[in-house]
Length: 369
Image (tube, helix red, strand yellow):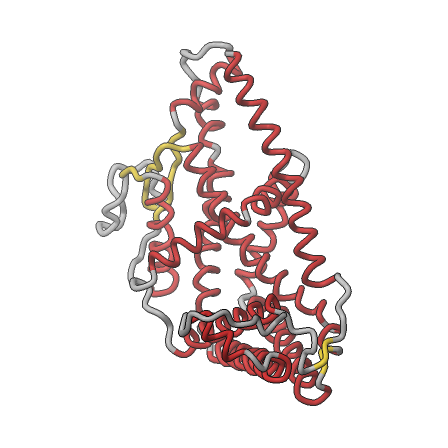
């Protein structure tokens, strides 16, 4: 018992520390990217250091990789392990931010309001699909192209990074859209985990024939069968598409949730102070909570459709071309700054490359010193 109390106390302390660390982490990211004072950089950069050299080279490599994937996407199977490793690594790095995000969304003070806001947003975008396209253009495409255009003028006309820094706050616009997109995916996972925690299985019926032994439509073969939550979500999505979009079928399924045994026990103890009591029909209605279940399932269905809309949006011609143009211009500017600064202020760079490649064993001076 004492060990359990100690571990709970330790977990609470670590949780609070992680939240505070996530807050300072987020503040640092915003400050370093948008708020810190920036010195006007002449081009070529007279203050080029080894650190700045590698940063510029790294940025150029990233843009080359992105452009290559935009022109010819990499095989999903070929780089599956690498992508899995990067996802795990990024999850670890941004774990404090994720915990802070969930704390702000799902604490006792904000959870109900957050559910209502997200429910409204999901329904609104579902009913107005063009909103998503306009948001993508307004929050990511146009600000990105404007910023890279300013960078091109600074680099090739003014020969110094000045006006780009004046408009750097525009870069927060794509971050807001990415966070909005992340929030839709995150609440989808949150809803799904909630249903899995509450319900053990879903009993499936053909709609409007819940209490009939046989379905009206003989093709509704899943009538009066059980599924787990994950399988039911996927089936419900496919059934909706087939009925409303492809019109391949003439029936809809609905589900009646079956709570976990632990939910019955907890309810009995809380209401009757007895874990083994015969419940009333009203008790079963409360436990199944069909209104909440149907609301969450409706949100999950719309979120899966929005996910497909996001994929179609990212694959659209205008968005793809704008990404290619933006990344290409960034690559040209960064490469130009890197090459011309290295050429003017690091004349011994060839020897430095030889040192890195171990072409000779002699001691070569560092060109950045």
